[in-house]
Image (cartoon, rainbow, N blue to C red):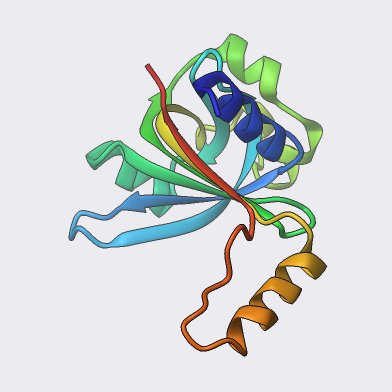
Length: 165
């Protein structure tokens, strides 16, 4: 599979996934994960945007260590993507206006003018995906392999990784 085909596969998996687990690194070097709502994804431009809150541990962690991981699971729970990258805390009113949705008013007392609103831009370094295909076929292959001594299930899906430049 070519690099562009892998990027297209990743784009296809993440396009309809609204919620992602963002993992950051604490001051102590521990991993901290929290759910985030993806506001915009442009793999071609190497930009994934989120609206965060300045008072959260995730934002504090990004201030000290920009390395993050984003974990995606498709709606049918058959496909997975892991994107690693560098998070940037951005102050850009035009971008905030572009990304803002009235639903965010539920989280910020003063709407997009709230002092705690924080744009987060993740610049992807690399990504890996797993597509499991048909659950029935995979289950049958696993069952067949389980009853055969020394046999392992093969071709249970598709896996690929790509580095962004």
